[in-house]
Length: 181
Image (cartoon, rainbow, N blue to C red):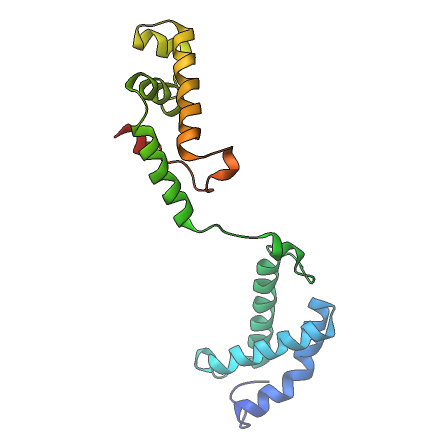
């Protein structure tokens, strides 16, 4: 069917619906999805009718729209998971950003209360990632002394912050630059 036919575009589109449905069913295999695909195709064709070249093949243009729509939907659906009962959706959650921020403020206050030697050892081992041996060389003391300082600093931080374990903190990544300032 050519666009130059005297029938209005709406009539031409309506005449091609059975052909579109047959093609959509061959792609989808599901009559309900095929009908949705045909409807989407007709909406797109109507919306973009000015991009159709008069005198060209309307049926081929519509089939191209239908096929492209089908392929776009398939690409989107490969990232989707069916969750009719909402079980998966119920497992998704996002903690508010304010808890991590407040945890960091509490940490900075507690960290400031530690003795200088403990802060230094904790920064070298925990934040900078040096080994105990490297930290001991930098501090000019025995490895056991550095280990003791780090342990006492951790225990004191937990005590000051009222922390039992990692579950008491928010889930945001720990900003290391905050303890270097």
